[in-house]
Length: 158
Image (cartoon, rainbow, N blue to C red; front, side, top):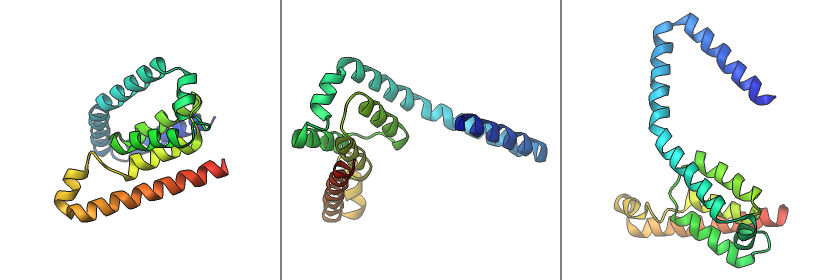
């Protein structure tokens, strides 16, 4: 129901904008279309990857590797995957929801998301080029520690 409300609000806003200034509205729609086309390949590749992962790993395997009872092993797997993976947040959250639906634990997924957003092994060379290796290493280690702390808190709460 809420989605219908949002679509309706967007359509009404678009009509109001179109009535107010047709040129700017057309230009913004063209710009939005180009942005969508630029995002589409990465979005489709990630969705394909999610589909393959969920078909290769059944719910029992995901529950064993990342389930709430996987313990430290599951946390290490989730943290390592988050640290080395480079995917945008708008793709990571649906992936996390799919993994939770397939039996992953909340603490493990929290660690995955936190490390994904905050720790950057793939981006470390670029970051160290601009900020220096020492600062980049400290930032990544502090981010890892904060991620572990946040996931432990979520594991206790949920």
